[in-house]
Amino acid sequence: MLFEPNTTIVCAGDSVTDAGRNYDAEPGGWDSWGQGYVALINAALTAGAPAARLSVINAGVNGDTVVKLAARWDQDVLAHHPDYVSIMIGINDVWRFFDSQFRRRADLVDVALYTKTYQELIDRTQKAGATPLIVSPVMWELNLEDAMRAKLVAYQQAAAKLAAANGLLYIDAQAAVNRFLDQASVFGITMDRVHPNLQGSAVIAKAWLDAVGLDWRA
Image (cartoon, rainbow, N blue to C red; front, side, top):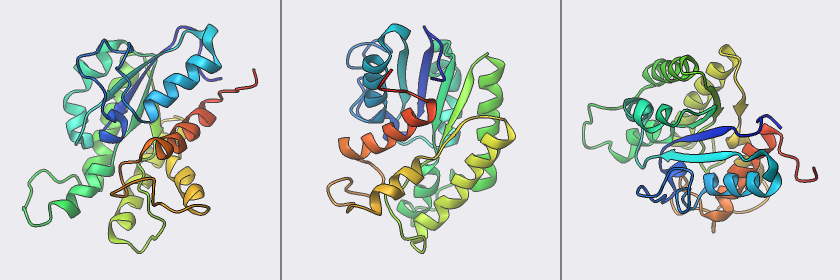
């Protein structure tokens, strides 16, 4: 497995990461992981590698774009002195072009700004001595002709290129979502094609755990 014993892993992102976490809970403690993929990752690492004593901290916040995430990076992510930072960000950067199209927002994040800000997060994380893990943002939609899904592709490609350029692990959660949707309906997984229920969160968590090499048989 990727992680050494006593490793601290901070999962940073938006509402898909947040998933209803208790902001008043002790980070990495009871009731702090939410009800999404971070909780499932924590449970799997605890059950699958108990001797490693891995600490998982949920630092997701509803509504975050990469710019909003960057604004709180030091106090909400690096302050936990992580060894690894799992970053899943980008769906709101895309979504704001569609759910706010009549509001003339001044804070829209295009691909260039997304890429620039994401690289700054990588640099800041590495300077602090932690290793970033880049997780693709996902949308529960197979139709690449759908306007929002088509736009998301550019952000996913940007994230993948950043991972490659910086020699980082890229976790293609969208590929896992696509495999699921090739076999089963999206109904019963998400109400808005963005926020998954527990089953959908398990699809993301499994992709993450497979990528870091958790072996349940060990």
